[in-house]
Image (cartoon, rainbow, N blue to C red):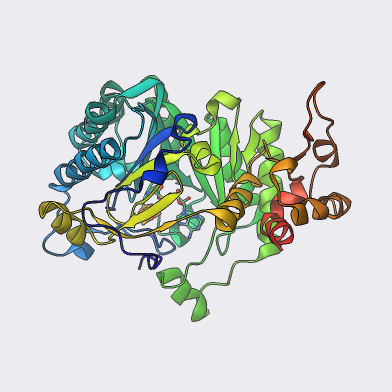
Length: 418
Ligand SMILES: C[S@@+](CC[C@H](N)C(=O)[O-])C[C@H]1O[C@@H](n2cnc3c(N)ncnc32)[C@H](O)[C@@H]1O
Ligand code: SF4
């Protein structure tokens, strides 16, 4: 079961945006997220807004999905034009899921075509799709590259069969080097997603997974601590004692091991859960989220953010298709993020990035906490105390987490936000 959407305010039926979104738009990149809410099998740990064929029920179908999502792209083009926003070609596109690659390549090409026709794609645009390792072939990856996709993010999760089995993953781990090679041969940049701390996973299992990922030569890895989400099959298994709960100390040790192995292979962290070989290998779409740029999220349950206005779509593919068929915006609710909530959001996202947060941008109360965080070994003292550039008037210091700080990022945010 996917988590509930936030409450927020009512969103207008035509999706119109307030005039306030125009302020500062020239300085913000514009990206598009496209949600594909379908999976062949539902993994027991996953609470994303995704449906198997049996869960989908009548009134919505995978085969009509591309046309439905194209109707939202069309609406988005009209809403942004009516808001008098400057014409901004799309800098990044991210197709996520669910499992986007359960759709035929033609559908994924049509969706990207809709984005291109509506806004244009910026030179050097990054176009990523997520994929499960058993949902691609050399031909499908070449087809995606020919359609304009530049990057693929595979859900590898683990290289160890018993860990994959606990996660209900369906792919054969021996396929990982093949899919990475096929993608690279097609000219796509590749990222691998890993999960650590699965019940029953040993430290050696985790080492094997990270080393196997690195042996493919990938330039980008995301590693997430397994979260046992309420309402999932895994949460039931843990409650019944069929699986042990996750252990924060075990997950911390695995984070440190991953960071050592990844850094040793030349991949540096640029966000708490993301490592890249060079800055050019980082996921620019995610960087834009964390920096508070503008993006339109297409699809059921997708979230959008334009100029401090945030909204989210109805969750079920049937309700989504129904609203668009009636010419209505699929937005279910929205809110304006300003003042204190905007500052808190910048803090929560910015602090997790290796580029850090300018101390000068923090409220006075938060600035007073920095020395204590440095003394506790959570914030890098050298970065915090950096002197202003010659002639500069504001402090150049930034909040950059130490590795211990990365493990306790939420506590750092709580201290700064208090
Ligand atoms: C929603 S999936 C979409 C991509 C693709 N379907 C897949 O599973 O590989 C994106 C990533 O979210 C992560 N994820 C999903 N549920 C999670 C959970 N409960 N805890 C940690 N990571 C999770 C997985 O690493 C996955 O690769
Ligand atoms: S394949 Fe990915 S999106 Fe689908 S259920 Fe599994 S983790 Fe979730």
